[in-house]
Length: 275
Ligand SMILES: Cc1cc2nc3c(=O)[nH]c(=O)nc-3n(C[C@H](O)[C@H](O)[C@H](O)COP(=O)(O)OP(=O)(O)OC[C@H]3O[C@@H](n4cnc5c(N)ncnc54)[C@H](O)[C@@H]3O)c2cc1C
Figure: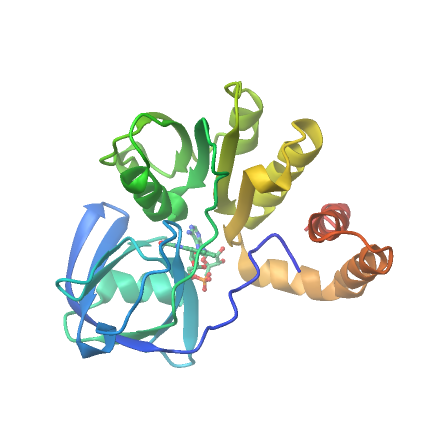
């Protein structure tokens, strides 16, 4: 278990999706539109942060999570916005994808679940989470105050989204700290919901701040790691200390702790190990 989200159960390749066109949303964000008969039975989960596991036509096989930016059943069209971060198989595939190429998608599922009585939303995101932020804003009810704190590598990566809600954006750049920005943000009164999707180690620290400093109940927030900085190196370091992380998790489970407290124990162990 880690703060990188537990994958939904059904990750099987259910739908073939064929590239029909591509366009730049910003210099480092490419929107790929997919179509084809394989999407005719695609179903949205209804959650605005819904993701699918995308299997790319690469050797060796390569699959990564992506947000459904838009699903248009009337046109049988589905859009995904890819960050062109320049390293991984998915990002490089997206940079070069041409009409006619096909990927396979799992079913869609998401996590965004504000309480029924919600007075405000706070969205904390980095570049990879902007597609989900866009959908949350586009689908939000009118007049809901939504504050977005978002980090992008360049000012040219900032986006604004159509919304009926009262959205307020605070953009920070790569050198700034999302955690510091969040810590300096005064939360509005009333019932709110905090949704956060950022790099995994940053997500862990933000979750700790929300739980321990601000005492936000688990029902009023959702924090996810969307990707991991320097993944290969992290994997090697993790392998070296995996026993100790597992032991911390086992201890919390044996003590009968709830899911969030077990996650706390794992996060603490990761932090201790410098992960
Ligand atoms: C639920 C969910 C929804 C997501 N939705 C989207 C989405 O809609 N659009 C999107 O672009 N991403 C999204 N992501 C993030 C995406 O899955 C990761 O960025 C993924 O690692 C990209 O795979 P890759 O093959 O390009 O790179 P990988 O092979 O995973 O990694 C290769 C290297 O690239 C680096 N890297 C990976 N991602 C990034 C990044 N975003 N910025 C900088 N460096 C990076 C890693 O540190 C690693 O060292 C989502 C993730 C989750 C969990």
